[in-house]
Amino acid sequence: MKSLVKEFTKGIIRENPTFVLVLGLCPTLAVSVSVANGIGMGVAATFVLLGSSMIVSLVKNFIPDKIRIPCFIVVIATFVTITELCLKAYSPVLDRALGIYVPLIVVNCIVLGRAEAFACKNNLASSFFDGLGMGVGFTLALVIISAIREFLGTGQVLGHTLIKRFEPPFVFGMPSGALLVIGLLLGLFNLIKDRKR
Amino acid sequence: MNLHEFLSIFISAVFIYNVILSRFLGLCPFVAISKETKPAFAMSAAVTFVITASSAVTWVIYRFLLLPFNLAYLRTLSFVLVIAALVQLIEMIIRKVSPALYRAFGIYLTLITTNCAVLGAAVLNIDMFFVKGKPVVGSFYYSLFQGVCMGLGYTLAMLIMSGIRERLEFCKVPRALHNFPIAFIIASVLSLSFMGFNGFKF
Image (cartoon, rainbow over all chains, first blue to last red; front, side, top):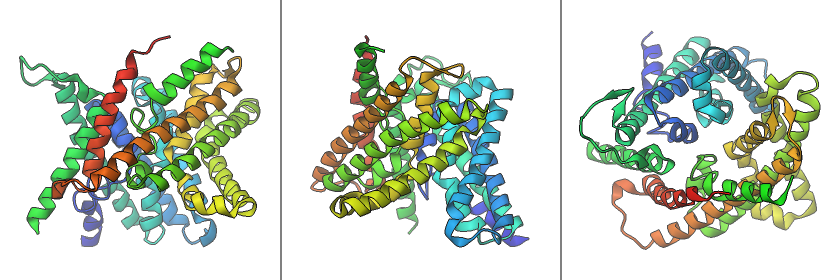
């Protein structure tokens, strides 16, 4: 039981996929314009991560070692397709906002990375918690980045104005702002790591 | 289908919606392999080649296999597999035909299999040049040309970035910003300057 909790929590801070492992940055930067988009992307990726981790850990004994990567990709792509169809049916606005980055979850390094590094070596329960922890960590990172960008770019967070009379520098809503925010955040994390040592 | 259309695809794919600096596709190699110009150029050449080839192949598959059999929802799955197979095939051919070329960008080819720029280009082509499940006039040529242009945009960003980072070796960068953080900050400034192309209208 204790180890399952550990599998879950490691993805959130100690092995956070975005800030510590620096994986899957493309969707992170592209959709973090607003918190709503960030949460949508995070939940979609978590769903894919959970599903593919569980299936991979279930079928790991039947997959020949040599063709494991294509097999993993097929599993992941199946879950991505499910996500795509669900988004189109139930939330067309979010689907339009996320655009091509939904099908691109399939090449997100976090998902394939977890299948290859964890799920194909561990049992169902620990793969489930590993996938969940990584998904939550990814969502959390997206929320932090998109909150910063949405606040600086539009002066609002989730549609609420935080400070009155604030003239937002709109560059933070543009691609350039995303790169600046992630660069500075990674620098900040390095600084904290150095201080701890 | 006219020249005007091609010109606008060129400007928008290379400058306005640059694959890396505006669409954020293929960021991992952009940050990881851009420390020196030579490998950066080899990588971009490999990416350009694969994007072009995969644009053509995925268009044919979508138009003649997925659409007639009503299988458009298999787009993501089939594209990923086809691109992976294509990259393997290209690698084998290059190794056989030209060992020198293989040594120049052989290792980068395998990395491209899961590069989001390649799949992104294929998906974008389908989104842009198919209207309600019907290809627009000249759709195939547009897709192919957009693939080439996205590769060129990738090469441009990669070359500028590696040029800057080579000079960065002589600068004093704060310890916390070493490697990844400073690379992103530089990319941010680059992206800012590419925003200037936004005003281009045809």
